[in-house]
Image (cartoon, rainbow, N blue to C red; front, side):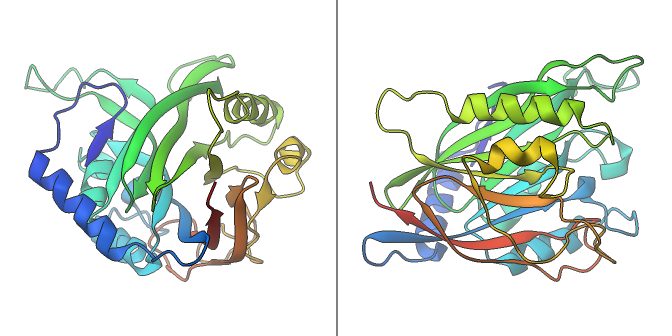
Length: 290
């Protein structure tokens, strides 16, 4: 099932949605006792290209399938963005080929290229996504501070791309956030982004707030001062290894972070080779029943 935040895409046929629900029920890790096991991952897919800069979605599908994760946060996802990804809808394709529900949150949503011959050519979009074996109940695309890469002399300003997907994990609601923070050496924008994300994640709920996960490429090491406010409220599922660059990792910049109500059992990086320029982080979690 594809859930698109702008609500302007085609609706996935009912039979496909039913089939995905059945797939989720059959393949998601089974619940035991009073807690629910969940394998989650985060992966920067580099717009479908590997560390060799060759676009190869088949290679990334194999890498993602090998994770056997129930929920995956993706960064650098192209949707009809350009020639580098063959103008394809990577979010939809990955979800379809993996048999998972998809929520996509564009950071950029631009008009089609002027040379596009079709009057109904889709918008060019780039952002983050959540793949889930479990049903997706709600989706929101929140704004956080960004410094655009799509124009000259940008200024920090609110822009979308902080994705929230609420999923139902064996009857337990869970808020899954996917994010991609600023890459520049100056931490000023990341500092603002962390504050913005915390404001979103800590908003009061009409009822009891679900537990939540934050999955993403933070573009900063765990001890970076700009990340310190996150660790005051979230716990880092530390894989004990760097994640970037994939072929000779030196920096740990990709994260699975969890709120209260989620137990971290283990975490690791996955040996996906050169399928992307990042390595994925995979974490084994347990959700408390509330």
